[in-house]
Amino acid sequence: MPKEIIRQVHNLLLKNKKTVAVAESCTGGELSSLLTRLPDASKYFLLGAITYSNQSKTLILNISRKIITQYGAVSEKTALLMAKNIRRRIRADFGISITGIAGPGGASQTKPKGTVYIGLAGKNIVTCRKFIFSGSRQVIRKKACREALRLLCAHLSP
Image 1 (cartoon, rainbow, N blue to C red):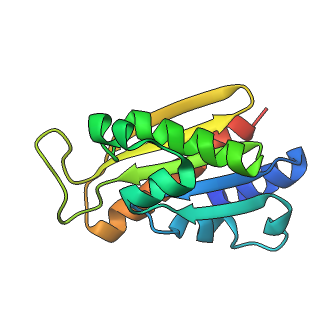
Image 2 (spheres, rainbow, N blue to C red; image 1 turned 120 degrees about the horizontal axis):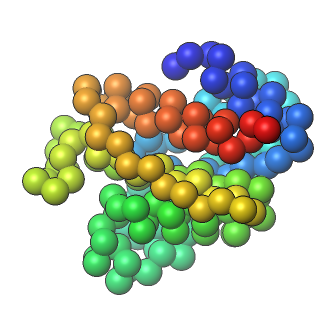
């Protein structure tokens, strides 16, 4: 993971006095770890929830079972709700979510290994980006975290 993007996000969050909460699935806490890597992260990092199971998405993030059944845990709809609900629940300026299939199992014809949705919710933004990453499980997780940081950085920059 390039240290520059971590430092850039860190500096922008501090400079803009913004806070962030994270709901992660396939990355298993890796994004939260990156966001808390530098000193003073406690000034902006409010919570990292690893909502790996469908049950945790329902109980912690208040995503209905109907949504998960209809669209899937790995979907734009779920990623958007993860980001919006973690932001609202923790009262953060930004909510970020990552849900995907890092492999080697769990893939399907419509959702191949490497399919990842990254959601971002803020006061004036609710967006989701879909990626299909290649590589090993660990490579996919790292790429997902890098893109989540890039997405946040783009919305923090003037």
